[in-house]
Length: 161
Image 1 (tube, rainbow, N blue to C red):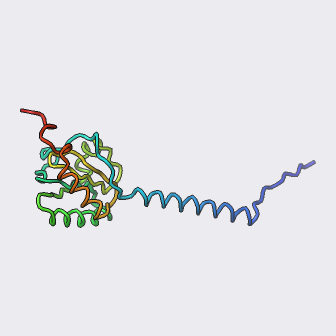
Image 2: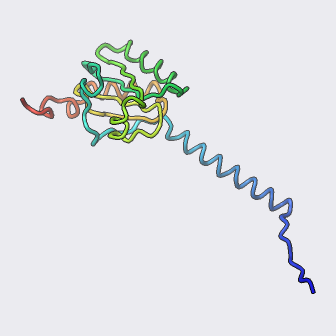
Image 3: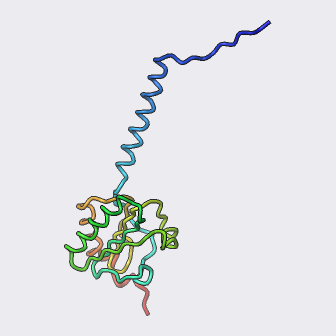
């Protein structure tokens, strides 16, 4: 004798509930990503970077350091923004590094995506950092802070030789 097994057949209403739930989760994930993308955060506790580390001289007031990759579309927007800010602010330098050729720095600073932007003080200390393209106003504020912050850029923090 054959035993009948009950097949579970989702109803249209159940399918709609699942679809709506997936859309809500995707919307929340997108909003969370948008909230953190390009947001500057403190770089406290990160080691200093030197001209030797970067292969180029640091700015006399601040340095905008960009980690990029050749296939990164947002990197082009970040490059234009950072170069424009550096051009309009004496003593501020923009340096762009390719992540594939600087893996030691990528590992050391925990860079997981491009572009990643660092705002460095005059002695190479990481004042702030962002993953994604930061807003112009936020970068200008970070540069002003890094350029004048006596705690970050003071000579008393440097090793004496």
